[in-house]
Length: 235
Image 1: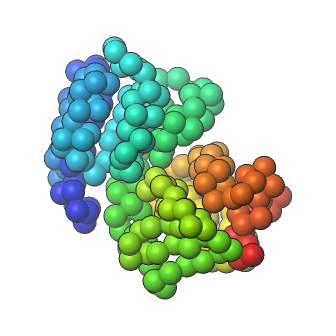
Image 2: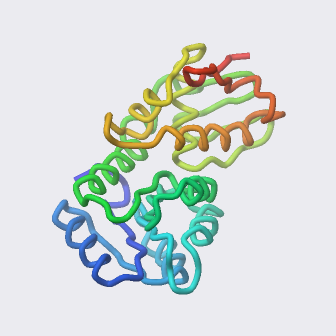
C-alpha cells in the first residue's frame, strides 16, 4: 500500500455498474479502500466528504460531463484526478488536462496499467518529492516553500494543483538544466517508459506559466528549449 495521509482511499466515478465493480475489485485487491459514485453530483459530494487520496473520473456521466466535474473539483481540491475516456481522441485528452485532470486513460484499458498509474500518481503526490530540500526554492519573483507547500509570486500566494506544485518543485530543484518531457514524466509523474503521454507535460507547463509568468506568451522563467524540453531560468 502507498504511504499517504488519506489512508489509500480512492473515489471511483463511473456510471456503468459492471465497470465500477471491476475497478473496485481490482483496487481493493491491491489494498485500497474504494468509494463509488455513479453521478457527477454524488462525485462532488463524496469528494468533499470522503476526502479521497485520488479520484478516478469517467468522462461520460448521466447528469454532467466528467470535464465539468473536474472543473468543479479543481475549485478547492488538489487531489490527483485520473480521467477515463471511451474515445482515443486528442481533443478529449487535452480538454481533460485543461480542466485539471492529472492523467487520462482510454477505454478499454488494462487493469494492470491502471493500478500502475494510480500508484505512480499517489507516489508522486504524497511521496518523497513532497518536501524536498532545501526549505525555500527561488526563481526570480517565484518562491516555493517546501515545508508549507506554498508558492508565492511576488506578494501573491498562488494556488497550484498537486501536479503543478510537484512539476514546479522539480524544475526549481534543477535550475538551468534542460529537462526533456520524458525526464519530467519519469521524475514528476513517476511513469516508466511505457506509461504517460508527453503532451501531458506541455499542458501542465502552460498552466504553470499562466500562474507564475507576468506574460505567459513570452515566458522569462519557465523556458522552452526547442526540440528538447524545458528549462527553468533563475532570472
